[in-house]
Image (cartoon, rainbow, N blue to C red):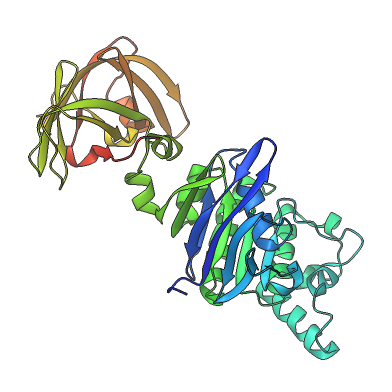
Length: 362
């Protein structure tokens, strides 16, 4: 076993879908991220022992939970995994305390009561110990489900869309609480979401899944800012993907042709003159020059504003250039200060270091 606490590599075949994830985790907050239907929830169910893979292995702390060649397939109750499904699956006719105590029948009564009391306190659920799930708010239900998952002191915690049923104003608080719990328990936590903002807020490690395959893993900022494929780039919100031709491939600044325009890319790698590259630019990395500003970045592009989509705190803008659309994100105050209006031609600037070479095709 490597330094990672958890390792999975398995495949599961369905008539219309193949799931074959492969990844490792340490004692960290990890997010399994992907579009709807990518296989996120199914992956958690297989790890928890609720779906049996066709082949492969799942190891936790050096112990095999599943190994098709060794014919090992531990039942869910023997895996030391806490699992919180999407809608919590609380027992509606049992109290909060009894929901938390479920699965602790192997403990002596006094130990069981002490464990439940500890978790009621930790989750700030003492006032609701005798209430049933239907009498709780969404946040209280989530904390109850989390307490039940932690009651058996698992070595791995799985959470499927844990904030989906929670009011927006509670989500930031619950995210902070979950991050605190992960640090206290010092175990791998794998959380499923299809929200990019939630993934960025929560993840120390990102595991990106697409069509049943893990296509990239790494630290949050490594995956967000250095995606390996155009598909991952789009999932991460890097919506501007351009095909350019290398004019001068000498590092650390590679000169490229994008149609009739020049783009300078900051990169430690050199590329052959005449070769084609896919490059990505995050929309928030493109700046709109003020009319009176002294433009300094190497890359200056004259483009026409064709669309404004107000998003509340910011604006999603589309500029037309080279018969292509570039997406730009600016804050609302910046939008107002720039006096932007549809049909205007404006100068866009982008630092060479903000242009990312995407190394692999999809």
